[in-house]
Image 1 (cartoon, one colour):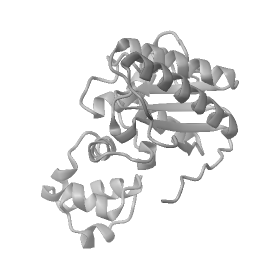
Image 2 (cartoon, helix red, strand yellow; image 1 turned 30 degrees about the horizontal axis):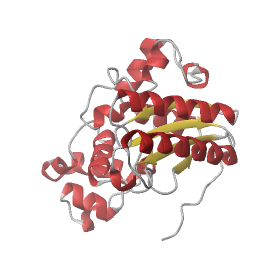
Image 3 (cartoon, helix red, strand yellow; image 1 turned 90 degrees about the vertical axis):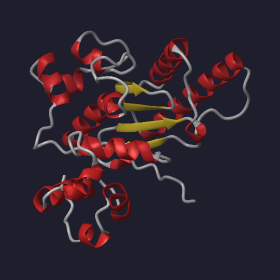
Image 4 (cartoon, one colour; image 1 turned 45 degrees about the horizontal axis):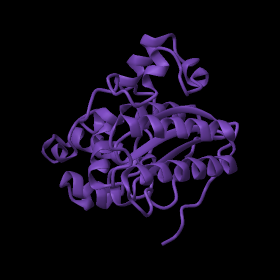
Length: 252
């Protein structure tokens, strides 16, 4: 299998995804969550980096970092090693906790930056676990209240206060790219792909596109293609034939 190539960002901004090996849990309770967040924050600070946004789920974590690419590697290695050793010792387990190399996607422009922040904060809601503003283990509350481990200045400066940021998070803006399915990183499960597809379709089920009128169907498929889903993936999720899908141009 070809290794994921690390592509540098002109702005030193990277969306990083870390997963549990075999989609296993990386946290069992709030003590684990607190330990993971503290370890991550400390590791990034030691490399003179900044956490711009984050969301800790049960078996993976999304992090938006501002730091040179080579320091991202050092920070992630330190955080994964320290936390895995602590976790294994606490639960009497041995072996790897995290799945291979972490995934990283470079942020190329302001639109992608905002789309990534929105996607990270919406993770619990698209997964059906909690509303984005009630999930305790993300940086959303740092943006609308007081920062804890994040540097919120870059993104918060693009909004006119906390309410504007909240509206941005929960409401699709037509001039804002949804983002790429690459945000999920390597090894995304079928359920995670479906969650992202719902995110791209403003909460609608991909399977419902086959029953929609032609215009609405084609609009939905164009969005999915624009987000980087393959024709085969869209066919599986929607039930629409690949011949039809291939004729629809991608659109963000």
